[in-house]
Length: 313
Ligand SMILES: Cc1ncc(COP(=O)(O)O)c(C=O)c1O
Image (cartoon, rainbow, N blue to C red; front, side):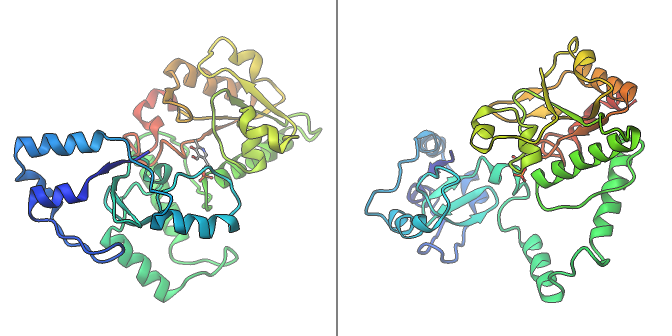
């Protein structure tokens, strides 16, 4: 959960910060203000930031909005009470004008920060030009993005055979497509239909649609929606010795996160990732790297795997 930094305290200390009511335009220079703060003031801000964020009171504007809206919303999450109305860079403001440091970035979605002016201009321009043409037709951007991703991937020196991109709307949809590609390859290699197993690993998270969920062997997520899609097997992450028995001739695909992000940060060892790639090649299985959480420079180079080119040999 984000920590709250007392806005009032910053105003008092920095003397530069001016803020209007919730949702209004804010005008401040936080960086310059921070640089001019005394050691005492910095310590005091640090102390504030370390305080747990108190929940809005039952008679607060936040509670009023939640009480009004929540009855109409499917309760997919137990949401905490703050209601966010504005963001700037790494900062968020709630409906009561309280400031939070955004540690989650929408679970690694808003990696460029909130309300970047250049990004906002591009979106506004495109919205005024063409909103949607469907995937039945070409447009100037889907292919351009695909080309850029392939070029950057090759430039990074790994995935030497990277050549085509499938663009979609979410992580789970990307994994759904990857599983479908694996099944299609399996059925092409073995038209009997026997080559249809999809292997994934303990502690993994691959998404909430039925295929991706079937590869997410966590009873908390799977149980309410059972039965899962057939043909999904679970292996032990980083168990090199278990790979040979786990991935066999009936395996059409293996899906793995190079760095797992569910309930901690668990990195795949180089030995494990290399052995997995080797075994997939031996049995003709599609190897799927799920870098939804860790890729696109979120953990360093473009995809995580580029950190170790030996994995791609
Ligand atoms: C590793 C991984 N795969 C897939 C997903 C699903 O992505 P989305 O929420 O965009 O469907 C997530 C989401 O957090 C993820 O962390």
